[in-house]
Structures are given as C-alpha cells and as structure tokens.
Amino acid sequence: MAAAGGSPSIVEYFGGEDGYRCGYCKNETGNLSHGMWAHSMTVQDYQDLIDRGWRRSGKYVYKPIMNQTCCPQYTIRCQALHFQTSKSHKKVLKKMLKFLSKGDVPKVVSEEEPMDSHIEDVGACDFAYKGESHVSQSELTPLGVDHAERVENEDQDTGEKKEEGNVQKVESDSLRLYADKETPVPGEPSRSAKGVHAPPKPGKGADLSKPPCRKAKDIRKERKLQKLLQNQTCTVEGSQLQAADQVFLLQNSKSKTNQPKTIEDFVFVSLPDDAQHKLEVRVVRSSPPSSQFKATFQESYQVYKRYQMVVHKDPPDKPTINQFTRFLCDSPLEAENAPNGPECGYGSFHQQYWLDGKIIAVGVIDILPYCVSSVYLYYDPDYSFLSLGVYSALREIAFTRQLHEKAPDLCFYYMGFYIHSCPKMRYKGQYRPSDLLCPETYIWTPIEQCLPLLEHSKYCRFNQDGKAVDEGRIKELGRVRVLHKRTVMPYSVYKKRRKGPSDEASVQQYASLVGQTCSERMLLFRS
Image 1 (cartoon, one colour):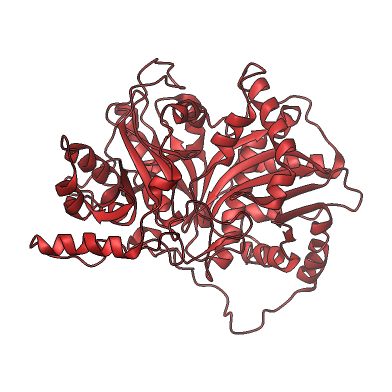
Image 2 (cartoon, one colour):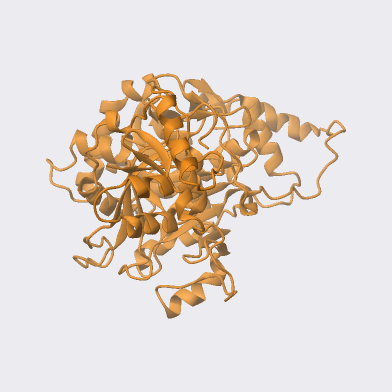
C-alpha cells in the first residue's frame, strides 16, 4: 500500500542500460547499471529502494550492476546520532566560525575532501537523458472502480486464489502524478519491518523526571546562545527554528563538561555582536516547488552554472536551465507529512546557504522516513576557501540530528555511493561511524570490516555468513503489481492478458532488484 492519502509509486523499468562512460576510471563503456523511470514515488518506497542499492538522478532511478561495473559503488550511510567529529572536520568548522566572526580568509587553501564534487551523480546526469520516459500522463491514470473490480473477478473466475489487495480499487482521479503545487500530500509513511532502522536506545543519563540542576555558568551560556539567531540561523520554509530547539540540542550534546565537543558545539555557536558576516541556512521544498523555491530559482541556477563551469570545467552553454531542472529540481518523490515526522515534511528539498543576503551554496537533499539522503552540492567558486563541500556535509549531519528530535526514526545520513576503487572518492569513509551495504544480502556492515576486503577485491560480499540470503528477495512473481491499459492488476492476471512475446524475464529481473515488498506496493507500468 502507498502511504495513507498518497498515490502509489509508478515506475517504468528499462533493464540493464548499455555501458556508459565512467566518471572515475574514464572507461568509455565500463559503467553498468539497471535503471527505471519513476513517474511518481512514495518516500517509503524510495527509502526501501536505497536500502537495496538504488539511487536517483532527477526522476531516473538506477542501481549499479555491482559484480560487472568497472567501479563498484556501495551505498554508504553515516550513523548521525553517534557521529564523531574528526580533527579535519573541526578545522573546517572553526575556519567558518573565524570567517563569520572576524572575516578571516585563509592565506593558503588546503586540499580538502572533495565532498563538493559528488562526481558519481555528474555521470548519472548523462544517462538520465537516455532513459527518459515518453509515456503520456493519461496512460498512467487508472480507470474507475468498476473496471478494476472486473479484473479482480477475472482472477477469481480462472480458479486462482484471490489474494487480498492484488487489484487496487482506484478512483479515476486518485492516481494523480503530482501534488498540488503549494500543499503537501498528507499521509504517514508505512513502517518498515526491518529492524536495522530502529533508532539506537539512549544510554543511561540524567533522571529526566526531575528538574535539571542549573549552574550559573550554564545559564550565562544559554543567554549567550540566544544571540545565535542574529548571526547564524537555520530556517525551514520561512519559519525559523526556535532558539529553544537549538539550545536543547546543545544541552543534549554535552551532558558532561569533560566530554568532547559535538557537531552542535561548532555549528550552533553564538557569534560576537560585531561579527563580520551572517550565515543563514534555509530549507526550501523543491518538489513540488514552494513559493520560496520559485522566488530564488534564478539566483540558485546562476550559482550552479558558475560552479559547473569553474569546478567541472563545463563549457558556458552546457549547464542549461533544462539540465539544472531535470537533474537537481525534478524529483519523483511525493511530498508527505506525518504527525510523527519532521516539521518540513518528507520529500525533496534544497538547503540554501545564504551569506550576507546572497546564496553561496545549495545542498540538494531528500528527507526520507529513516534518513536525510544527500543528492548533490554546488557552490559559488569564489567561496571555495571555506571548504563548503565538507562544511555542508557536516551541516547536513547536524540537520539529521535536529530532525531526529521530532521524528525519532530518522537517524541516518546517506552520502550516496562509496567507491573504494577510486581513491578520490574514499573521503566519504571518514564520516564515522558509517556502514556499507552488502550488495548480495543488503545488510549494513561497519565500514571498518569492509575496507580490508575491498583492498583485496573491488567487488565484495560484506556479509560473512555464507548461508545468509537476501531476505527481501522476490518469492511470488504473480503478486507483482502492474499498471496495464490504465488498470491495476497482479502480474498473474497481466500475464494471461498480454499479447506477443513473454516479458517474464524482464519482470523477474525488475522484481528481484526492487524486492518483494516494493514490487507489491509500486505499480510497474506495462504498455
């Protein structure tokens, strides 16, 4: 089932694309992946897909063929609640604070981790054009209830066992592809059965039923902290996060004075009254586009264009508005709001970094039931001395921790793919603690256990239990949901109706890659 009140995901599977150029080893045809076009997708379905190694580029969703592709790409996630700030991370955070408070610009720009480049997605941008769908919206809109009931009866008449929920009764207008432009689609994402997503249990701490003892020093610190909103604020769609929320995060981050500083101690620090610069981070919904997103679209695009030309050496005519929109603004994710979800809701967003009233960087992110997923980052090259790639990743980790306060299940930060065979891409492993996804059993494995294996072979099964299998594998092909001639039906019915050569091999491949749960929830479009 789709999330209550929302539309089910509709996908068009393309199978294994021809090999395309690899952005890492420059092999012209070595990069191999399976792909599908997502006309619409629920956040729960996308969460479950990225937990099986999929990733999106615009509306194109792809999964590297891990044992064949030239540079295997392993899904990586950071355990945001337990994040340990490294020395190099602290250096970047302190550099930003010095710049904001005193205007200090480092004389020598050091070689920082290239978190800014996300080059795996630059390549993805090209194949999104190859795999675009040409199906009209009318073909994707199911017919009325009576038609669906006839299909349901057809399955019964043939003597097959009727399975509850195999044929969805849908009103003709209930499967709209896009939410209203300004109003998010209500609906609570379904809870996954996977235990791996349960947030870690908190350790023993102070008795929260008793009022906390307050030292004069702490009270002074809190008063000082109130000033932070004047200089370094974080805004979600126009409504500033309350100072109290940020104070709460800071108090939680350091319960003992001798504990090491947390990420909040660097990010939500109060600046002096005479601070040289003001930084504000705004989170705006990009799909469907909010009024704030529309109002800042041109300025944001100009930053992207300069970034692509200076950092990625694109010719001036390449970073077009069309490319920018399709790659970084279009998203199949349906906007969803849940009572126990984040204030801003789930879906696709741009996290804009405003310095003294102008955009200097934009982090493209997806907010999902269990994680914040980083899609891309672009920035004004004039500010490369601030190591904005690393800084934005740290801010996104802090943002994940912040969202967790309201949405307890949301506790991971997904950084896309880790490519060990490309030394330039190993920096993602420095955000600890982090896990890599086993490409065969889809179990998360601590990166420390994976690295020795990857030193011996670029393709590895991380799960060392030889008997372990993919628990989410396809078990019943007949239960795969299909949208055919505007009618929702199980594959068992579609197979009998289909004329021409069998497409069972393609449907079997699709179902094995998305898994049983998603194959029964999403609609696979068949012409």
